[in-house]
Length: 323
Image (tube, rainbow, N blue to C red; front, side, top):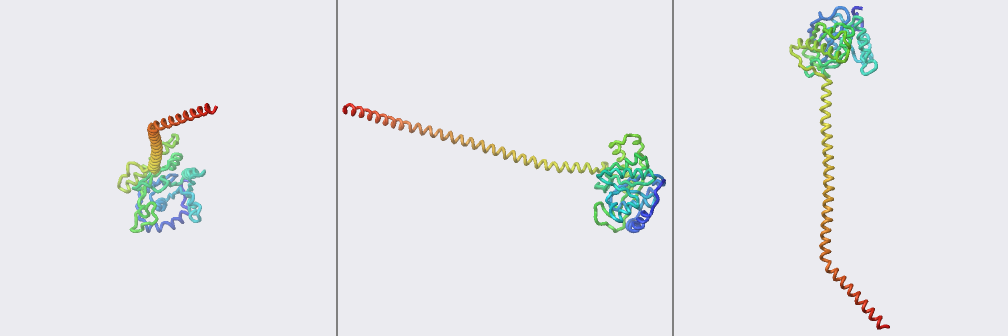
């Protein structure tokens, strides 16, 4: 099969979604000639608003090549939305489960059958302060290298003015313009016939993200920052900064405990020294007292001895006269 037919569910979704999109958004669509008319391919798109999948879907629906998005598996479980997701052929992504790779297998199969698979390589709304594309996940590069299909970099800008990232209320007036620019296919041929290592996939992904960024620079008329925003690096830096105060607190607590231990040791030593000084002072006072009392004790001993001698003399005298 060379291309996917636009079936009932896609036409039904278009009937529901196109009128509000036409009312709320003016269109500036360029690069439609870069969308392949036949055969399987990938579009790699930046993501800066919760409404841009609808706005971008409108663009690609009008090219005649309807996309199959990779979407969170939870969207497929609810009633009407789940039926619409399944009916339009969207691909569920089962994150952090044994079925996590099934989305990539389904994407490869879709491309090989001549369909278009739309990837948001960032996998979430950009967190870049200027809303430039962040570092990407490697899924699009993996599918592209396995199938060697065309990868069309697409930049969009304007849906974020209708609904800013992470905002809850749209800004409906004045009417916003949604800019879309599809670029020429990304050249990934230098990665073919090489072992598909994690490093190779990261390099191929960066080539794709650079191509998307180039299209967005053309739309916005300004240059992107030289360093791409990397949320993982930012999280690591935040964790490091969080750990530093904790470590500082631990050091302060440890210093306080050590200070208390030192203080207790000093108090204990001071107490022992004070006791020793008191004992020494008491000993000195006792010695002085002994020196002062010695003549008295000697005199008392002499008196006692003299008395004993007199008693013995008297006893002897009485003994002789008594006989």
